[in-house]
Length: 142
Image (cartoon, rainbow, N blue to C red):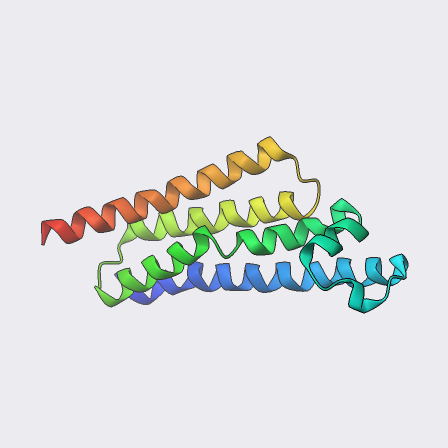
């Protein structure tokens, strides 16, 4: 198996993070202009939350979330690459992680339906924990 294939879902997560970052500012800047508060007012996230509509802040919450479990995903993908242990099961799980994280971000940044968002988050997490557990057991077996 071509071990470089594990880099594709990893790159996909990086692209997702960039898309959410751009979307956050595309929503936030017009809302800040509409609020007409001096820019210096937004010195801490709490002020932004207070001054802007809740829905405008959804992408910011999602961006923070993209630096939680995905960090484990990045490290794990690099581990699999370096140890040359990439196989079909890891690739399927990595693509599932990415797919569920994309769907999670769409929901989180737009309608923010909490239970749907949770199920998508949990599905992505299960794919990640499968990968991590399998890698850990594989390392113990060597």
